[in-house]
Length: 208
Image 1 (cartoon, helix red, strand yellow):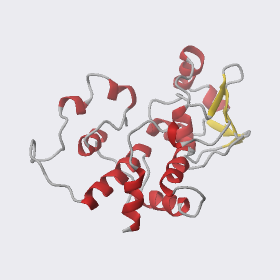
Image 2 (cartoon, rainbow, N blue to C red):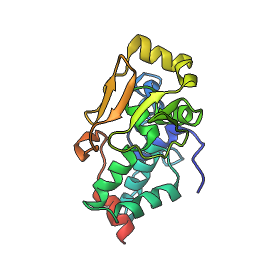
Image 3 (cartoon, rainbow, N blue to C red):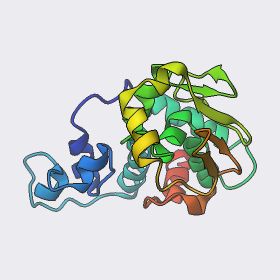
């Protein structure tokens, strides 16, 4: 399955909650979910019984849409998670949090994960001094993230770093405002993930 290229607002309406896929717009009165908080399609206002499979699938799709990854990528992450120590569901979420595009988003250097993914692909960031243009690259504890020369000249990034400064940075990421360098000081924890997700349902989906 290829990456979803349709309306992001339809995904929020289908899931029945805001996935914050469009950054600040999702928090404004222009948000489509605020105007039409019901699933897209002709069944407006109708109630459909959701099976246990449907509930599990919806939870998996919600997380997949939040991080903007394909079905194959998600399957690969789960396959990797079950081979690592710890609870598979929590390990899965930790792996997704460590993606480079997500770390850039968590730093507040992009309005959304899709914006962060585009910035990474354009070569705006370095990891340990080396160019990193793969959004799915997993950042490890101790890795240093800095701007490339191209990134330093980007107007949007310059506005954030020089005028507003990164905000709401999670505790597992450290940012030096003087050197404009970020680094992972610890592994992300389940408690660091603020959106509502029942990872147990995802595990049940793959265990059926």
